[in-house]
Amino acid sequence: MAVEPKHIRADELIADPGAVMERVTRNREQIVVEQEGDIYILLKPIRRAAKRRRAKLGCDVEAFRRAAGSWRGIIDIDRLKADIAASRGSNRPPAVL
Image 1 (cartoon, rainbow, N blue to C red):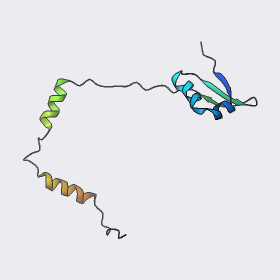
Image 2 (tube, rainbow, N blue to C red):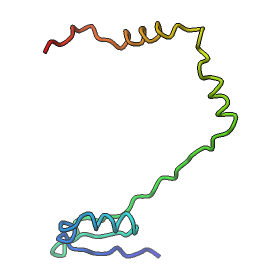
Image 3 (cartoon, one colour):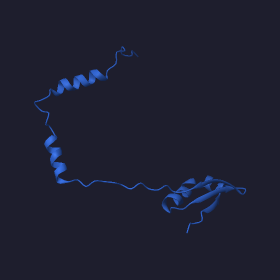
Image 4 (cartoon, rainbow, N blue to C red):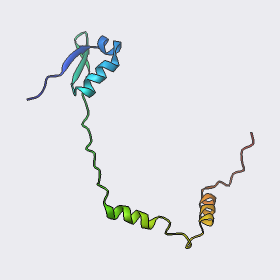
């Protein structure tokens, strides 16, 4: 069975919007805001996305530790950093302030 939304006047929303939002988010209420008999808005909570977290497995941690520093001695890190900086650079002269 659907829950009937609560009706409030626009004055209540204007006077204390934080309290109205609190009712919607914390209490999961639907609220219809109306003025002089006309419905202006329907406030209702959004569905919360399910948090998907993969558990850290021992093999994942071990693979990370093996990969850390694996380029040492194979690639010149300073040269790599210089190449990356040069590729991101600009051909424009520096701005003089």
